[in-house]
Image (cartoon, rainbow, N blue to C red; front, side, top):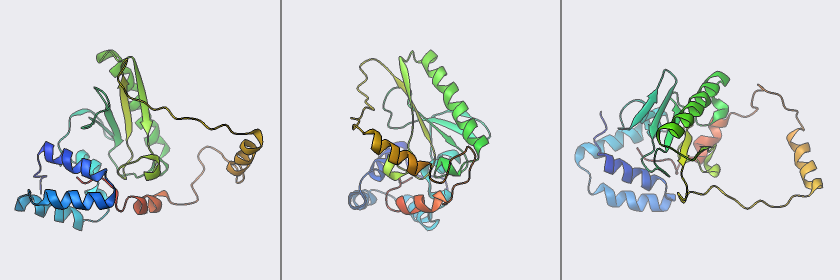
Length: 214
């Protein structure tokens, strides 16, 4: 079934998906009264499909079931304008395959993703006369990831645009840093090593109640 929601309704649903679970339920219940039978049936079918690719809003964008302003596409990657942009030209770049974390992506696909990101950032400098760009990736719900699908924000920056990514660093003593280094290197580290724990299992639990609603 094709997505029966308008762009404004999709935007409202995505905003609800950013709220805490209790607020999500209250807002969604209120909004349900405005839906027609076809729209309610669509949501029910998406819910039945569980936590797989079909319910992920970004997979629905890839499949063309959610409308988007697409600015780039190849066999592996798609880039679309964010519907809630931080600045003009704010773009989301994502793999077409469903990966919850970058740790699940093959090195070749991850490398291609960031090649597209880098070239897009250069293009935004030229076409939108941006003064800078932020390239931002959130891995995991605790890091600010809103849905279990890898995507990279490319955010053009302009003078006095009001966007801030600053945080206040906390002073660390040499002894503390040495302990952290020891913990990181306890099992050794080398490029290309396999993760000991499957990241997807963690992500499914984290996003059980907090993923964005398509």
